[in-house]
Image (cartoon, rainbow, N blue to C red; front, side, top):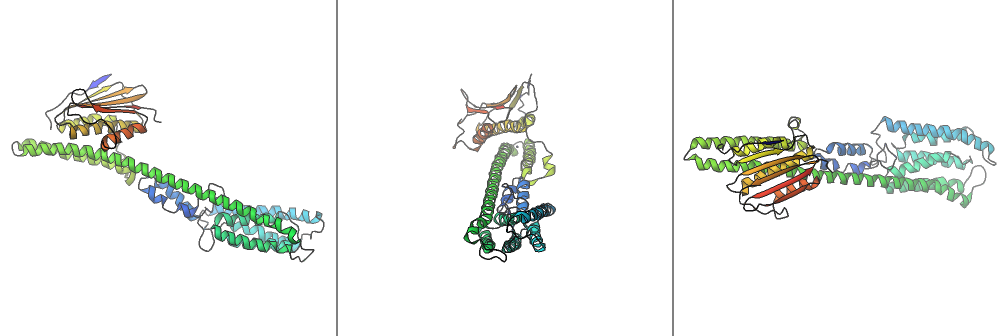
Length: 441
């Protein structure tokens, strides 16, 4: 199918998150360092701001406490862990004390110490140092009194891990070292039985060193993951800024070129034929209004202007209006569409429109007295646009010295896996041709 428009010439564009012990948690101190602000300017602040807020809610304060900003889930998880360990430790310790030779039988004091060590874990991420102190005292006393080794030590393991994973390394190391010294007290002093001596230092140390190393590793992984997310957010923000800058360049450049042409016409006709100068000034008003409307749509990503977002993104369906506007500005333009019109991916549709718009803008700026023709072809697996003019021609190199227009067109087309050809025509004039696949890579 082929359609065309006739030419018209008679008329004059943190700390680790308190709610997550896994390796992918978000450290609040790192997450709250401003990544949300970086991305907010591009309209993508929601995700990063939420991450930063979540990290900040889980941040450890100057007193070594973790703010349970995530409320119920954190408290419920820690309470479940504490109750579960208590329910496991009591019967297992009882059985061990009955069957281990030389062990002190479990009694009221034993169960009290078990309850103190395990149930204190219910606030381990809210007050990690307090939890470690209570657990250390209870476990050390338990061992000094001669009660048997068993699941009681798991509560100490969890407390040391929590301190290492949720506090700054220096404070965590000091707390863990102090707790280890207290834990080894049973190796040199025993109320009942004989102290274990140096033989008991190594296994006791393992219960502190292993969870501390694990906690530090988890913390490092969290911080690394958070830094990677922040860097990715910044990269996306930079890409979005570049995209918006290209859109603003295209919109403003096209609009100003059309306005400039109409202003020159108005100045030329003002003294001799003022009634025709009024027509040119009317075209300036219309062109500036349309350019401002398009600019508002482009910037709606940043401003989150709901009314602006309802205006459709420019596409090939708006090329007829574009050519009509240019004809009113004094540039003879024809439009030909080959193939069956169909909906295109938004990115492809916008890129094709911008190629046409920028090419016609260059005709206004550089071609002198010229006419132009636009040809749009709908292919089975893509779309082509071609803009020809009869002006003076120019450089066909879209390189560092070719200006932002051709460079921006090439970047748009390359990003979509397309092909862009620019260069002078045989004889006179200039040609811009772009082929864009509809399957965006």
